[in-house]
Each structure stands twice: as structure tokens, then as C-alpha cells.
Length: 115
Image (cartoon, rainbow, N blue to C red; front, side, top):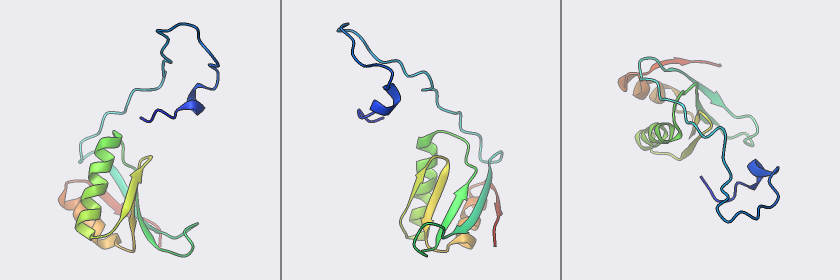
């Protein structure tokens, strides 16, 4: 987490207690489901990307570390850039078939969706 989390503590203005530490209530991270229980969707997306095509993988349930490691695996195998955040993995370019094959080899339940 970053130190710049001021938006989450808008209710706390100032504290005179030198031992005060802002408690985050929803800091529990989700348990990562096994790959056989994951239901992933792979689609092509170009909305709000100035016409550029990206492969979007949605439906991942688990921690951010596991999401980022899966995203890194996909980016490495496809040889392109991308990102992984908020349960979605974005791979630059149209790599739907390759991503589906990689995810099936890793043991994930995956479907193509969209056009």
C-alpha cells in the first residue's frame, strides 16, 4: 500500500495522540481460489483506448499478488506489455487465442466472450 492514502481517511482530520494509527477496516484480502475453480473470461476490448485493441481477462478471484503473477506470466508468454489490477488483466494487442491456450495449460477454466 502507498503512504498516500488520504482519500480513505477523509474523516480523520487531526489527532494529538502520538501513538495514533488510522485503522483500515477493509484490509482483508480475498483468498485465491484454486485454478480449477476460477471462471475466467477472455475478450477483445478497444473502448476508451483510442482504437487500440487489448485482450482483457476478467473474473479472477484472489489476492493482488496472485493476479499480478498471472498477469506477468501472460505478458511474458505473449511478449507484450499490459497491466493487472482490480481483478482484470490487460494484455496489449489481440492475443485471445494464445491467452486462452496458456490459461488452459495452467489449469484455469476459461471461456472466450464477446465478438
